[in-house]
Image (cartoon, rainbow, N blue to C red; front, side):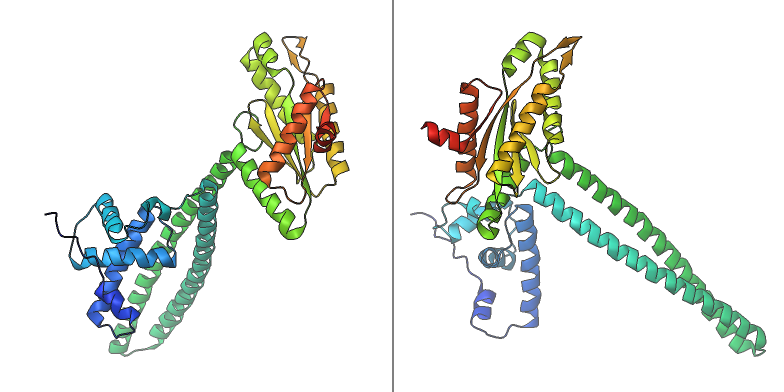
Length: 362
């Protein structure tokens, strides 16, 4: 015969659900269970939603009540035993976006800094008030002849002095902590910027582009806000690498990225999509404006002087344009821009083609 199946249940939770009164001891136990559960959830990146919290509370109620010392793996096994219909515990895991993580920590650091600075101001006022009281009491002490009262005033003055000294120490520690928090916040902001950029070209990376296009599609459907997508590919880039070397290829990538940026507006986004391909998001444009911007970029690259060891390197780009329309999502829009780019390259390169050109050709 196999081992009898464990009965994982939580009597306290049952009492709460039935609206029965819980004792002070049970309230203390609930606090202990909650602490252990929250530590586990945070440690394992499990989202603390009301549903998840209730499910895992039963597990930790059983663990704490029976004074079990279990590893995270063993706890997950208990979860699977309690909820066998859940196909995978990974269903309860949250995918942390590093960008969101940095933003959150940066915001928390900013809030803490503001609170610490406010506390420092209060401390300064408090110190000033204490100092004024000390001066006032010293003056009073000088006018009193009664030794008992003088002794009492001396004790009070000593206590005031100690409080001031403690406040000075606290202020110093707060100032040091505040500087460390500011430094952390600055480092996080720098890390956030670096994480969103392509290291070589210093334009947005693919992850930043993916986030941005999803947001723009959402704005299109919720706010009717138009936008266009350009897919840009450097013509004959393999030949540039083969003829001049990869260092020159890197130089061309950087200069093309720079030229694209120079021909965009402040609110436009250019990203390195992969290899020698760039993607540009143009918010708030008409179809005609998006084509004009694409032509401006194409001409800008064509006219730019690319030099290597006193030799001029011919560099051009092909561009595909797709305008956001009803019925499209980010994937279908990218597909349309890719098809337009493919048409531009197959039609002789160094030109701009649109998704309408593709439809007319088909």
